[in-house]
Image (cartoon, rainbow over all chains, first blue to last red; front, side, top):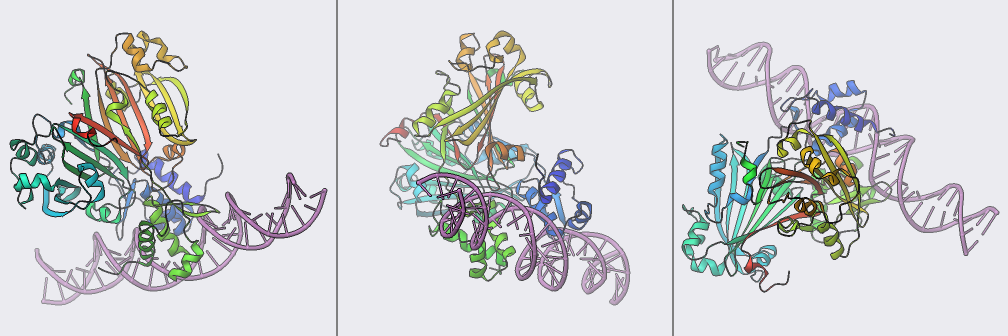
Length: 257
Length: 257
DNA sequence: CTGCTCAGCTTGTTGGTACAAGCTGATGCA
DNA sequence: TGCATCAGCTTGTACCAACAAGCTGAGCAG
């Protein structure tokens, strides 16, 4: 074990104390000034150590307030149930799940027609630049930004199902609306990726340094072609995707949850 | 649009230039000294801006070398095919996939018996602290650390299938070995989460700041109880999990990939 | 009692300096 | 030729100073 630089020692000590509950979630750390004296280091060195912990997602800092230990209560989302093929329920699952968890859901919504971006066109098997309808959702939980959801529908489908391009909500859910018009979604392809947010994403989700985003791309298929592509952006640290595959009769036994 | 601090301006300009291909992946950025003159800023200010880009995962820095633009070629892993219920193939998929991609797989392996940690016991429905067998894999691609995989088997299962506790590899694959002994895995439950790495994870995967890890937890079930729990940690920026659900006959049409 | 102001705390931003440590290519010795 | 050394580049670590900006509670004015 070679000697660590001082700012890493600061980070290591504080990290351990956070893990041991000396500073529980929500607690404030000592100020930079206090830490300077405790570790006999300059303010810059202390700040270097603290910024390590920030980028690890352990703490946050706010000007005027100090450093606070982050809490890590994850929200579990059952992706394979989220939109059951036999019982489609598009955005409803969000409202239901959040309300069931005793939190307050809230969302803004907009509809837009635009040339389809490269990565969307590829998944919808249409020519890039072809018109597509974007239905965009910005979701909050207890007024905290939670996720953005962008669903693209190809132009040919919108011609057949015009309500998709209308700005209002579709009460029965878009998946059900389409199914009623003979465009049943019989399968989907999910892609899950994680990375650090772009400044734009960081702004929309109001996340600072040290919080990755999780990208969930779902392409829905009818019997003969792709009919929609949904890209959902989550705070990576607060969300977890679950999939149930195969026979899981043994899972629910002996345990309620 | 209010005035941004200078270090953010530095980051914004460089971020845009990276996006526009002025600095393509693999290219070196100008040195801190050059950037000081270009932006008429102190070294600290330039370093602040650069560290922003590092924490966004856009660039890396190495002492003596400089700052380099990261490439992010993602490796796509089909999780729903990875271990087909009808054709179990445990770790083989890794070797196959990597070799098919023209890369060189390599792994270290160890077997250990230990008291089961809380989160494992919960998933395996055993009492925390009960003995469990851990089969641990550290995987590399072209000698670059790629993932760690820890699979836990409950003690009762190991009693019935002793080869699990032996240090050697199981040629036919553990899933197939168990199936041959009447313990067929008929379903699994997947959990996918993302967060910043712990120092330990950062060490094992050799990742620096700005790279999240993706955690993939798969609990496998026989007809009547859980039989294994696998926790895989990936570099989040280089991996993508895919799931195919339902009828996707329309997906493979008209396109080879 | 209510509401405003402000002192005094916090972190944020920017400048400076000095030396350590890692990498590379040129130089020069054997 | 081949190898070792070193100058000169790079980033890493550590210190100092000063002021800006955000938050909170004490205390004063009404």
